[in-house]
Structure formats: C-alpha cells, structure tokens
Length: 52
Length: 243
Length: 218
Image (cartoon, rainbow over all chains, first blue to last red):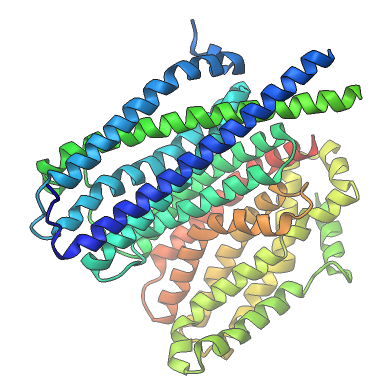
C-alpha cells in the first residue's frame, strides 16, 4: 500500500508535511477569528436590542 | 436578478452561508482524492524519482497564489468603480490566503529544489518573481492593518493593488531579463512537449480544482468575518455616540 | 508651479530640512560594505555597481517620509489641494524637488564613492548615466509611497515595506546597466528599459499619487 519513495522519501514527506501544516494553520486561524467575531457581534446585537 | 444584489452584506452573508458547506465539502473531497491519487497511485518519474509527487501541492499552490492576487485586483476594481463594501472586504479577506499559497509554493519548491538542483534556493526568474509577489502581499496586508478608517483603508489598498499589479508584471519581465533560470517551463500548456506526462496530469487537475474551491471557501468565510467585524465597529461607534 | 518648486527646495536646504542626510547615509553605507565583505579589491570591484545602486536606493528611501509629512502636519497640503493647480502637478513638483535635493546629489556623489569600492574605470560613465536615468523613477515611485502613508503616525517602516517591492524593476535594470558598463559589455538594452520605466513612471505615477493623496485628505 505505502508507495516506495526511494531515496527521496524524506523530501516528498517533508514537502507534504510543510504544505498541510501551513494549510492547517490558515484554516484554524480563519475559523478561530471567524467564530470569535461572530460571537462578539451577536452579543453586541443582543445587548443593543435589550437596551433599545 | 442581478449579480450586484450580493453586494448587499446581509444578502451576501445569507447566500454564502448556503454555498459554503458545499464548497468546504467539495474542496475537501477533491484535495483528498487528488493528493491520495497523486501520492499513492502515480509512478515515479524516470528522472526525478518520487520527488515528482510534490507537483500535486506545488503547482496548485502557485496557481492559487497568482489567482488570489488577480481576484484581489478584480475586487479592488469593483470597489473603486461601484463602491460595494463586500468587494473591498473580499479583497482584504483573500490576501492572507494568497500569501499562504505563495509560502507553500516557495516552501515546496525549496524542498523539491534541494535534491533536484542541489540547492534550496536559486535566483531563478520564477522563484524570484514569487518572492517579489510575497513582498507585495506583505505590503498590501500591512497597509490594511495600519489604517483605522475602513473606507480609507479600502481605497488606499485598492490603489496599491492596482499599482502593485503593474509593478509585479514589470518585475516579472525584469527578472526574466536579469537571469535565465533553472526552473522548467509551464507544467501545463498547450505545447505537448513541455507538458508533464498524462499519469501526473489527471490527479494534478483534481488538486487544482480542489485548491480553487478551497480558496473560494476560505474567501467566502473570511469575507463574512470581515463583514461582521465591520458591523461590530459600526455598532460600537453608535453606542459611544449615544452614551 | 515655479514658486512651489522654489519653496520646496528652500525648505529642503534650510537647516533641519534633512538635506545632506541622504548623502551622508549613502557615504556610510558604502564605507560599511568593505567591512562586511572584506577588503579584497577584485571582489569590491565586482560588486561596486550593485552596492552603489543599492546605497542610492536606500538613501532615497530614507528621505521619503519627510517628503509630504511636514506639509501634512502644518496643513499646507490642504491648501495645495484646494489651490487652482491640479494635485497631479503639485505631486510632480514635490517629486521633482525630492529628486533635485536627494537624487541628483546621489548621482554626483556616486563616482566619488566608486573610488572607495575600486570601481573599474569603464564603469564610472555608465554608473552615472544609469543613476541619472533611474533616480527620477525612484523619486516618483517614492512619492506614491509617501502619499499612501502620509496620514499614519508611524508610517516610516510601512513606507519602506510598500515602496521597496515597487523599486524592484528599476533596481534590476539600473544595476544591470551599471554592472555591464563596468564589465565593458553592451549596456543598451538595460539602459533603454530603465529609461522606459522612468518615462512611464513619470508620466503615469502622479495620477496614482494624487488619487491616493485626495483619499488621505478627505
């Protein structure tokens, strides 16, 4: 199943690891900030509605 | 119904909420299929050995790095001409995605270049142009961060994007003139001789489609975040005014 | 227009205007290079054109944040924006004044500093010619950067970050022309490209700078 990467195994794997890591960081940061901003906005809207 | 209706932030949020699950799912599936296909089920290249598998990350990332800038250019133009806030915010949202794509292309290129060319980095025209593109992204993002007033920031970054595009293209030609490179020609072109072999091109297409959809999903999500952040700013300002 | 140019020049020359600082910076950078790379004269001769171009570029960059900042602070930019003179002309004059006070002295000083770096004899002519053609582009592009960051508190570092990528084509062709000249090769192509960039930038960039300045003055 696992392909024979030959002498370049480390090269290929590190390229995949680096890319997936960068993509992962991007997604996590994006979702984290998105969630936080959404929560703050909803809190704020609720408070403003309550206070009139 | 005209496409400009999506320029209304509320409408944009509603409809992006609907398409985003589709985008996330399809991009996830396509990237997984493309990478698994490319990683497990393609032969080694007779010259490059197994390192050819890096192409499934390197080329789509490079493609999206350039397309992200192009999308920012179009969004900036729409903002300058039609003053739709969603458009300006979409350009802002795309920049960090673009810079990460540029980083991936540079990183995978360096890792790939080490065994193939015997060096991590060479001042080859393509590599150098990407480094310059990286600097343009940095400047663009830094300018957005530096300005408080959101409309001023949108205007200034839009003009920077337009001017930057001209200079990025100029740099591309200047760099070509300055050094002939190691990098091979286009991986996918109509010229059959230059193309990568068919065994590699099919999973590559899948990965490219996956990256494109992934980019779209991220931009939609981040634009939504920017719209909400803008609304928070407006609400806080109103609150202060009333107090 | 002449009045504005003369006013800008006078302000720059007067003490505190920063005139001469760019030149001093150019000198210091050039002196530091041999300390960094070693005193071998053949190595210095080889890198001299590039170092001098880079030094000129950095000195130019250093003086940019004062280009509009003083006029912004005391409000004379607002006056100039409402004056009958179009803002594009104002910004071109500003760039011209910057070139006369910064670019031109750099061009004149470069051959003297070339002696320090053991620049080959053939190189002097093309170094001066390429700088003469290239520094106006540096001033005009820099003015755009200054206009972009004029309202910001700590715009200096951001200004460098924004302007440096825009300097890439000018630097490549300028330094290439100087390098080829120093090595006795043909310089026509890079010089023509450099002249083309300068001409295009001088013709078009003021519109972008004026647009940016109008947004900042809003």
